[in-house]
Length: 154
Image (cartoon, rainbow, N blue to C red; front, side):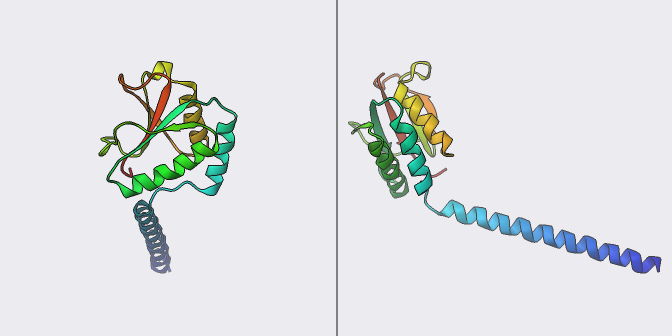
């Protein structure tokens, strides 16, 4: 009888193990598949970000996608639609970026400690919808403007 009980316990352990392995494999498969999809902003995020930005400060925003990255360009168009709908002033940056050394989307301002109010508002509104836009300083950036750079998919 004791041998039967031990065999039953081992069978249950094996089943739990197999179940956990299967769940992990499925989770990894979903994660890999999601990395192949292009970035996108959901309609719910779009609406929430526009609503948040409409109540915030306005000012100049440059949108700067990596030039030869179709996915980054498509994503930047979604960001641009949000910013325009919210009433922010969009301007063209004089030079296109070939690519960015930083993956993902991020903000560029002259000084992080003196960022323009529209930069702070953009960062907070996107963050509230689950989209992180980390800020980076650049001494040659116009002090009253913010750039949103869109690099390769992280």
